[in-house]
Length: 263
Length: 250
Image (cartoon, rainbow over all chains, first blue to last red; front, side, top):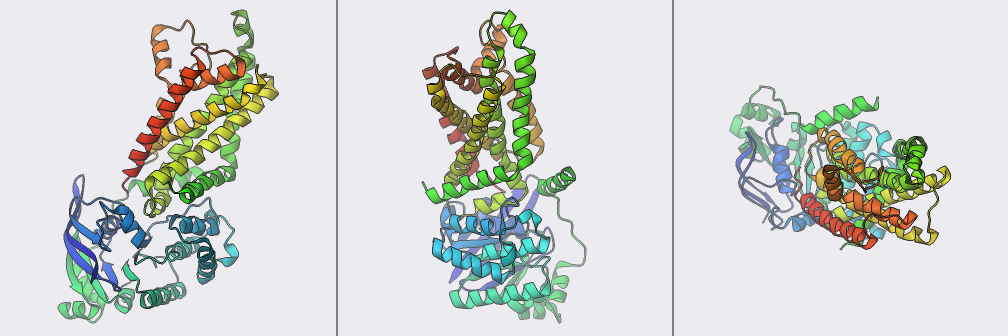
């Protein structure tokens, strides 16, 4: 059974086509990797799947619902760990988690228990009452991961979750996610630039480039298709070796300005 | 209505406010300056013109000023949330955006009302004396209404803004004119026609007029009329704000 179905999905911004008629399915309980170079359209696709952006054309089903029309049903089915920071810097670690738990309607008792567990899981228990703005990049990342795991959704989206994490934390996180996947049947949809991570963990992989899906299948199939020894080679064979630039959004410009302002 | 959602968003606005001391101090410094510099500075001229005590007249205007600045700023904070990513976190949550918007707006309005109350007491220290002490609760109510109105307006505007550039524009071309042309600093009687018309379309005019009515028993319009206008506009901005907020795309 497919828990995500995407057909001819297209997203155009003023003059660029970020996502160009892609189609793919994700099966219930699957661990699915969505790979591509910078600016290939990964995050835009995720934003449409999680109701943050309306598609220009095409159709999406997430857990049987249409993100455009039944956005609240979709939101109830999913959890997301974003690529860029999405914590409230002026709140403490604990308050960020509590806020999330309340918004997702996790009952108080379970909420408090899980917050304790997850804080110790990401080793932030002794920093729980510190403001997030005092945290290092890695600590913020760990807190975001803890937050994404707080409400046990049907589908968990992770947009480059391991970016900037040390190997210990990365391993730790994946074993937790695999556990969640086998115990609760949580479908996991993730993007990453670490090919060995995708090779090891994903049951199926889709590779997107220039807004189009150029290949998909298990990592074995992708390697066979391209005659490569590793997924990394297969990825490079499929997407080429030129380095991509991502357009800097107003977000990035703003962040720089605010930093300059604070100094 | 989902009370938990509204509550947690309200609480967040309050926590953020109390934690940013520079903002608290900054937002109190300006009203104090206005009270002292204008209140005492223009006092003698105002008196000579036969208008009575200027500090008495000015205090409700400065209270209104502190409320509108804090309120619009609270609404506009959405831009920060957008830039720092936190908005995404609230927008993908499985709660209606109407509840999120209401929680935020009530939170921002609570802060702005509190600010108005503090400035009221500061004005008392500076020498301001309300005429009817038993009308003070009514004045606080009007403050809350002004706060709600302009927080909703700030939210509506910020829902359409992508980045920080628009912020200066709003401060200079919306907040400043709203304040200066509201009769906060001068009486509404005998104004040149053009200015009189502008003051009439400025929502803050009615807020400050009602405050004066309750605090010093001087008002240009009737207080019932002021309150009806304020309530109607608050409802309108809440509706528009909720609609625009629900349409945000990231």
